[in-house]
Length: 316
Image (cartoon, rainbow, N blue to C red):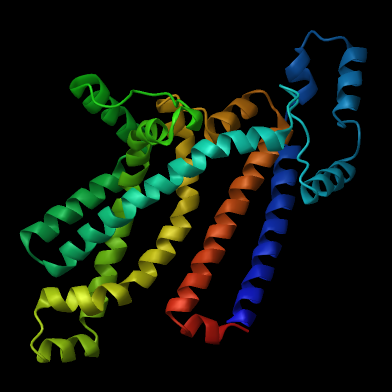
């Protein structure tokens, strides 16, 4: 097990290193001058040159890359060109909103998706199965931000339940903060639950055809007992894997959902930084999202190996 974990840690580190190179290269070749965006097109050439020198834009791309990576390794992501605030501080403040939002969405999506998928598999070929699959297709077709608009119209506007937007902050109390995240998390959870329902249905159906299930049925166990005692545990592996992979999708989807609900999270910061060509903030935010996704996938791999020894034994 230790060898497997070390192998996955090395792979995660190499993936993050490759991601950092890709992030820097993509952002550095984009058109536009951040110094001109800050000062405006009517800025004097000497003022523009002074700001470009202060921002390090007069150095070669290779030098800027190693300066940036060196800072990343010691926890220094630079300062925002727009606000002059350390990027790490800005990301930490926004992550206190976006990470709980994505985690809450996943917590809502898992029981909903697994429950509906298992129910559809147990009633395969019947009307409820077809109805649940239609709902699943509908959930996949609807974008999260549009679901968020519908939720605002349904609950805060029509039923006067919940808030239409905004985030009071954790200093206002965990109850108020979580209440403000419920509707945005639900908007993110619906498409995720549709994906998990399809995966869970397929996994449960595959497991129902296994030999040990036939033995359990031959011993007199009902279909429901077999599913609860034997099938769900074996079918959980692909669901856990997909859930880990989708966590990054939830963070990315939070960008538009945060705008709909007027939540100042990581997505709002990233959109604002993109509008101002604030490269340090953009690079730091994208690298952070990559790091979170890689870490979650690493944890999923370790959990998968703990539940099923086959991937561990196959690792070089």
